[in-house]
Every structure is written in structure tokens, then in C-alpha cells.
Length: 163
Image (cartoon, rainbow, N blue to C red; front, side, top):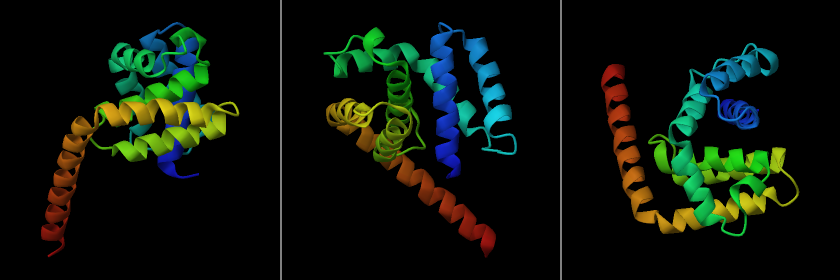
């Protein structure tokens, strides 16, 4: 299992449990620590899963508003907890995380839905995230231009170090 995928899996599991425990932020940190100890004790993701969980928690009300808007046929409480939290993670990465291209966020969310959701979860996640993507495309394009610029700068710094 690829490192980032494992981090996302641990993040989704933590968010699922956090959701179950009624949004106790402090509990989320404890849950993530437990999940690492229980399911990936030797795994070091340099804080990526913690970054994801913290980001979702920081923006969870805004993220939930996106879910309500882009899944109008499904009241938030009626979306399965796993699908709801995969959407939360996907929306966080797509909209708020400056280091993740939107298409990567969508693809990763779909893969998580295939692995952990029900038979139609991946289609549902794809539909919600795809609709959001279309509506905020200009914002995503600006984000990805910033990401591309940052990557070029990092590459230039690395090349200077190597010479």
C-alpha cells in the first residue's frame, strides 16, 4: 500500500470514529495516535495523516456545507458515515490543501470509497466531488498554478544544492 494512501486510510478511519464520537476534536488526535499504533506501528508519514485530519477538523463546517450543496438529494445525516468522511477528506484536499492537485484528491477519494464504502460509494463520491470541481474550477486552477510554481522553486533549490 502506498504511503499516502495508507495515510489517507488512517485519516478516514480516524474521521469516521471522530464522527461517531460527536465531533470531539481532542478525541480525534487520540484516535489517530491509536490508529497508527494499532494498524501501522512502524509507519512514519511525516505528519501527513495528522495534517489531513487537522485540516478537515479546521474546515469541517465549511466542508459539510459543500456536501449539503453538492449532494442535495441526501441530507448530511443520511449519508453513510464512511462516505461522509471520505467526502470531507476529498473536499479538504481539493479545496483547502495547497499541496494536493484537485484531480489527485478526487481520484484518492474515489479509491477510498471503493475500498471502504458500499457498492455505489465510489460513484456517489465521484459525483459530488466532480460537481464541486466544475463549480470552483477557477479557484482550483489558481491553486494548481501556485502548486506548480512552488514545485518549480523547490526543484531549482534542489538543483542548486546538487551543483
